[in-house]
Amino acid sequence: MAMKFPSEPFKIKVVEPIRTTTREERSRLIQQAGFNIFNLPAESVYVDLLTDSGTAAMSDQQWAGIMLGDESYAGSRNYHHFEKTIQEIFGYKHVIPTHQGRMAENLLFSACVRPGDIVPNNTHFDTTRANVEFYRAQALDLPVVAARTPSLPHPFKGNMDLEKLAALLQEKGREKIPLVLMTITNNSVGGQPVSLENIRAVRDLCRLHQIPLFFDAARFAENAFFIQEREPGYRNVPIPEIVREIFSLGDGCTMSAKKDGLVNIGGFVALNDDSLAEEITHMLILVEGFPTYGGMAGRDLEAISIGLREVLDENYLSFRISQVRYLGDQLDQAGVPIIKPVGGHAVFLDASAFLPHIPPDLFPGQALVVALYKDYGIRGVEIGSLMFGRKDPLTGRDLPAPNELVRLAIPRRVYTNMHISYVAESVIDLFSRASSLKGLQIVHEAKRLRHFTARLCEVGP
Ligand code: F0G
Image (tube, rainbow, N blue to C red; front, side):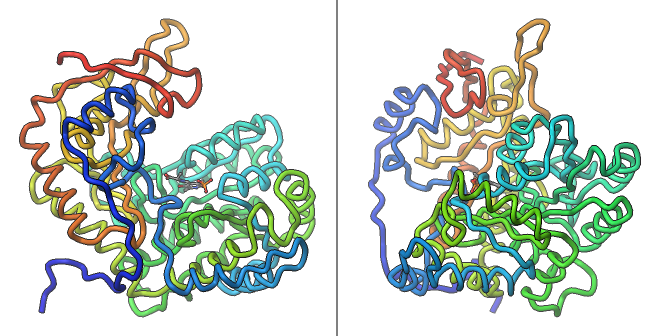
C-alpha cells in the first residue's frame, strides 16, 4: 500500500501539553515582542519550527541512560562509553567533549587559526563564521553555483565549489590556510547534502597541499542518508558504513550533538592529531571543564552515546527525511515557492517570491514569519535581510541579503504528521492571501546580530 504519510517509527510514551491561544492573544503578544519572534514566550507557540537544534525528543533508552549518569569529576564511566561510541562511529582517535557545537569550533580554532588566515568551507554556519572571525581570520564560503538559485534542483546542492577551492589552495597554500572545513549537511544553503564524490575531491586537494580537512558534523547522519538515496553505488551500503567512509576522508570533526546527537545539549571535537588534541585539551580545561566531562554532566554524555546510535537507524532516518520532504512537497504542489530540493532538517520558503510586493528593505521574510505566528501559532525564522543585511559603510543604508528566506526547521521526533499537515495547510492558506501582508521597519537594533533583539513595526506596503 502506498502511504500518503511517512509513518512514525515510534509511539508516544510521554506527552507535553500545548496551550492553545487565540489570534487576538497572539496579535497582542507579537506586538509586545516588537514583531520579533525571538521575544515571544515559547508557551504561546503551537508548532515551534524556530530550530531543530536542542529541540529533539529523547527515546526511552536515552532517558534510561540519563538515570545511569556517573557524575564523578574525573573518569566517569559515561565518558568512556561516549569516547568508545564516537571512536567507533567516526573513526577518530581523540574525543573531546564540549557543551555544544560552537565551543567545539572555538576550541579547535584556538589551537590552529591565526590572525590573517583564511578558512574555506562549503558554507560556514553563523557560529562557525563568528568563531573564525573571532581569531581574526577570514571565513570564506565556497558553495557550488547551484546553491545560489532556490528553485534549481541538484542532488548535492551542499557541495563545495572544487575549482574555487583548488585555486585558493594553490594561491594561498598551507601558510595561510590552517584547515579546510566541510559542513554536512550544508545548513545555510537549505540543509543540502554533500556527496562522497565531492568530499573525496576536497580530500585530494587538501592532501596535495598538506592541509587538514575537518567536518562540521552537526547533521552527518542526514547527509549519509542522502548519499545512500542519491549517490550512485551507495543504495545498498548501510548508513554506518557510509558514515565511516565520510569521516575516513578527513582528519577530524566538530559536532553539535543538539542535532544528529538527538539530545538537548552537548557537542565534541574528534580528531587524530596528537599535538593538536593536546593543545585543545589544555584550553578545554581552562574554559569548559575536565577532559572527561567538558561542560556536560555524566548523564548528558550517556544520552549522546545512545542518541548517536539511534540516529543511524534507517527507519529513523527514512521517517525523518520523509517528514521534512512531505511538508516541502505539500507546499510545492500548491505552488508555494520553496528551496528545491527539500533539504534534511527544514523547509525554506522563498519570501521574495511569496511576497513580491514587499521589497527587501521592508523585510518580506520577517513579514511572513510574523503572519505565520499571528494567524496560525507557527514559529519559523527569517533568514534574509533582517538576519544578514549589512550596512553600506558610505551611506549607512541597509544592503539586502542575497536571498529572503524563511526557515521552517523540524525538531526530531517531536511533531506528528498531523502537526506537519497543519503547517502545510496554514502556509498554503497564507499564500492565497499573501498580497494583504504588510512590510516591517526596524525601530530599534543592536550593532551585531541584530535579528535576535531588533524591534520592528508594521508599515503600509
Ligand atoms: N554547525 C552547524 C551546521 C549548525 O547548524 C550549528 C547550529 C552549529 C554548528 C552550532 O552548534 O548551536 O550547538 O553551538 N545551528 C542551530 C540552528 C543553532 O538553528 O541551525 P551549537
